[in-house]
Image (cartoon, rainbow, N blue to C red; front, side, top):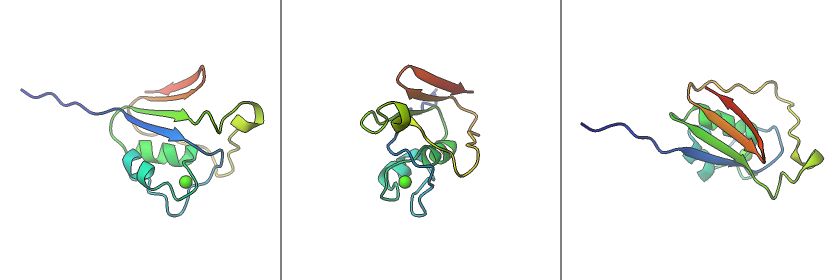
Length: 101
Ligand SMILES: [Ca+2]
């Protein structure tokens, strides 16, 4: 009998904007990595993509962008963020971690 295995979907948030780029493909994490809309991956885009990707997702924050203090702030201008996939998410910023299951 074969057991179902899924690869851990990993994505890196690489800008501090709260923009869902019009041309970004958020249908899956792989699609977003391939086409981020040309301006990097925002947290909002990453969440949209992971919501559309079955299985556990991991998001990290680009250490060359999120360098601490105000440089690590994402000011939400587009409303609240909604993680609605039933799988686990681990958003890591240094030692900081939020999980949702
Ligand atoms: Ca983008």
